[in-house]
Image 1 (cartoon, helix red, strand yellow):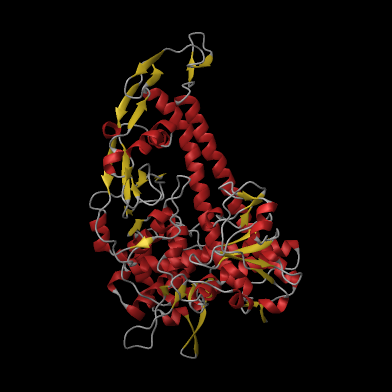
Image 2 (cartoon, helix red, strand yellow):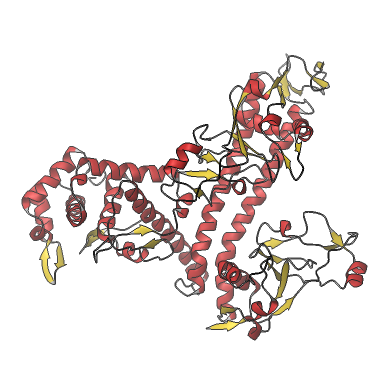
Length: 622
């Protein structure tokens, strides 16, 4: 049932408007910049207020295990504070009662994020009042059910948080190693006696470098960035209109570039093919490229992972390492020496700072011998790749959490009663989500080749991709009315979050299409998308491209039927396949008949010939 928050004894704390001028206490002062996950454990700015300041300014203290929600300007940032804290009117404090689990309420507020923005007062600065929060309705369940739902979602968030902590530790490890090798110059050397020692500490010769105004190891060089890298600026044109035509046509934006040096592509800015060709005329960024922000977070740097091939949007400059190893290059740019160079070269404009190509071209690198670079790169690239894969996993976990969230809340997915049932339910949810990705990628790939089709033809594609091209779909295929088919497909294709069924023009017939402008594709592995796209293209080229509409769907059913008969009877003999088809009963137009009656022997022979010629049987014959 639905209840209003005020009816389940939830308290609301509206902070004071003023900000303290003195921070000399031990109670965290929370800003919106301090929130980057589910929990608030303190303050990144190290701003803490004292009891005296709280009393003098009449500040409100939000007790631990409450919820803090941004209700002004940037609406919808939500977190659970694990410690008592103070804040200003950017936020409202929500103190749960004994009638509601704090985690359940947190996820409910995340679910209602977009709708809450709509109820904000439309003033110069949007604002959600305490009264509107009090009258907000949520789906109320018994406390035990609340805890079960929150537990499933918290498990995913806890893994995301663990990956974030691991990534922070790996980032520190890489920076520490760089500092040891290239700032302290204690990189390992092997003496004539075979003992490994640190270079500078064991008496390695140092020479003074005039450019850097300090000593560097003998034999090392200092080179300008232009000597070792290609520098390519973004277009300075008007930002192109958002438009989804293809998963690959997108621009990286400033918000994709994270402060920790990684790139988050869970939200892509898609553009048309024409705009994409224009914006990638100078460069298409790929693995190892380094990106500089020119404005906003001035001179922030990130490095492109192997999952990303894209254009760059406004206020971004790309640096491509050519004669310097890429991870070493990135860590050098983020070292104290080059950060100091960057600070000296930032343009101080009348209204804001900027760091552009002109400043980038002034940067100078310490260049060690190639053998030292290679030894260092071998270590740090593994660290960097682990961080990239952790971020990728977090994107997948976030997508799974966001898919489960509304379904758990409205009862479409139920949490089991026992631990074993919970594990089974969690596993099943993950399996279903992976199957949705398969269906989604299949529909998307068909769209790319101009094939609009319904559920039946899509189901046949999934079976053929599984059996011919080895796509691990996870479906369990059996003889059904539609052909070789898993009924789970039809159920999952009704997931309205990802699929819809537009009608063909001037027709009652409909086709399947993806619903979220291709956003789910960001969590689908690139090799899987390539495997599916390649398979569909090859099958179309070999046979199906000559047909359209219902006739094409019927031909796919024929091939899926023949291949399933080959699989079940382990034979390529026409007579044996026809015998199996005569035992395969279906209903059509209210009548019961067999596959042998629906498809002639000539049709079967033609399909069998194509299957033989292309060796499509090799994965189904033992």
